Length: 545
Image (tube, rainbow, N blue to C red; front, side):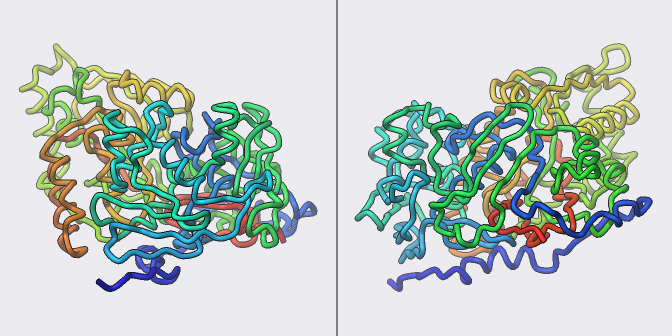
């Protein structure tokens, strides 16, 4: 069989296709122009301050749980592959990789060091993969390794096999072989994800979980944490041992945990922040100089997750009523209002090989949808004398609050007897509530980790990473398993369309909109790209004018 040798340009094709034609989209609302007078240069060209959106829960890349944690991990750790400034796949710890069958993959590692000066070896990767799937680690995204079809990963996660039997081995210090249970043509794209990044074996074995404390952390990325004042800031210094250190212009990176969009933007205007987080509300962002608003397409689906095992959402009629009655067009176009698109399937349309599923009910007008929603709720026993009551959980953010308030109002307006109580929690508490299945309905979003619908549809399988609504359908799981057996993209897209149809039938979530990444970026920041739909920003690619 012909060996498939993957060059960087070849593996970037899938990413390039999805990003082609995507450019900046500035808000249409105009500010007063005051920001246009902001200095185009900055005196301190060595320090960059970015709002990261929330306080993180861990520095350990194997124990991260959300976008803020992944953003930190990307600065400190590099996997076998990584992405460039435009989000295209590029070499990470592996200089090259090849496979003859998309089942057995061989990665040749570059000469690289950990921040303590020790070499990064294939043995570190073997240890890291074993650690990720070991139930003792309690890794939040261990199932990502199973989704990548790494041999024996599922059995190990379930405790049926020891971690040592995972299909990953070091052929020598610089050669890593990964064996899958079935072909995965996009495995190199998956290898860039946080869950597949290495940790230093010797340090972790010596210090245990304490290795990830700020004073002990050892990394292989461009930056290393030097100071962490919880609730205030994280300060990272350039890692002199990073393989690309001579190309890293920013010496000091400061990340802030601001979860308020207006506060984020006011500090940006005051010159205290160089790049905002992505959730500055549209009405606030309108005050910015349009040239400083950078909007990117996004591999992110925003939705309301329903706990299918907890009343009232253990009744599919109620779940369907909520999706029928939500005016997602109004929310996307008038509430979020930064270029978001209303959604009717889980997979964002910007993703390659899209299912392009159209539910039958999407063809109904607003009045017909509401009438059907009321009929279903009446059938389920809800009416004016017995109103539908539930709590909607969201994490602290002006945008999330604004959308939740709008959804609450739209549901009440449409149905009359829907009483939605909004519950706000800080990021860590919100994650814990969802993971423990304590919620009835919760704001949720899933941002793809690679350019294929599987990165979204894997979430909804039984025990899928991020499936906190506890949805389970054996037919869905079995069909998902068949997608990798298909010989071409068109056949896989057909399976993905069937999977979206099952989700439409079972209604575990209310799809709301497809997100965009909109940030305010100071004009002196050089190298910021609006082509990265994955949102995998890395400060190592930027400089200050």
